[in-house]
Every structure is written in structure tokens, then in C-alpha cells.
Figure 1 (tube, helix red, strand yellow):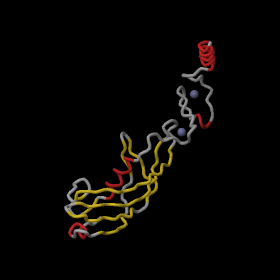
Figure 2: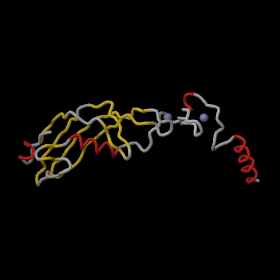
Figure 3: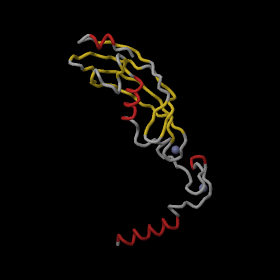
Figure 4: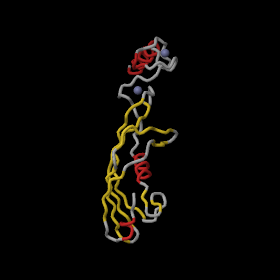
Length: 162
Ligand SMILES: [Zn+2]
Ligand SMILES: [Zn+2]
């Protein structure tokens, strides 16, 4: 996005729609595909003393695997940009050009959900055979919570109450 006009005039404000070229988001150890995006409507104000004030918003939809069953989940990210920036910020400004993609990318990572689940009660994968348990059970013995063991624990906790 061309900032020439706003960079050269103190007090100047411009409003633009910037089209995102961003196709993926890199977060921690993964790269996630953006499945939906809309243009960013952005206001940039030259606040004087080499400061720019940026405001804008956009929405992205990213495909992220469920933390339990690994099925892709469409995650909606509501990006709100509201920041003050140095006019010589090399991370985002190259000459007179604002790198809107980078700005949106970095903001998206800040609001990235802690844990993505396809649904609250996702049953995950069988730890023995890897079957997706949302699609039916596999008949394996559950490795961590054997029903007989659960009963023992139950008796044990009753015993303690006495
Ligand atoms: Zn799931
Ligand atoms: Zn299994």
C-alpha cells in the first residue's frame, strides 16, 4: 500500500482498501492455509513527529487441524488493527510502501486461539489404532482409563470419605 501522500504531509489521513496477497499463516511449527479473506479497509494518519496511526479491520478464515482428531477446522480470525507505528519501521514499511500482508499476518498470530477443537466434545483419536472416534468406536481397549480400573478408583474414593 502506497504511503507517499501520507508520509509527506503531517496531519494527513488516507483511507484505502488493501487486497491481501497472503495465502498462508505461519504459527509456531505449522503453516496454515487461508481459506477465506476479504480486503483490509485501512486508515493511516500522519500524526507528526514521524508517527503513523493505523486503524483497520478484516476477517480471515484459516484451516487448522483439530487438536484432538486432526480434522481440519475453519477458524475465523477477526483482525482489528489499531496501532501507532514509526514512519521508519523497517518491519512494515519499505520506502513508501506499507506491507499490509505482514501487518495482518502478525496481528493474526496475536489472536490465534489457544486450542482449536472441531467441537467441544471431540472424542479424538484412539491412542491404540488411530481411529477417529467421532466416526465410531474401534473396539480397542482404552489405554488410559480402563472401566475396571475406574471402578477400583471409585471404591477407593468412597473408602477415603469414610
Ligand atoms: Zn476433533
Ligand atoms: Zn482403536
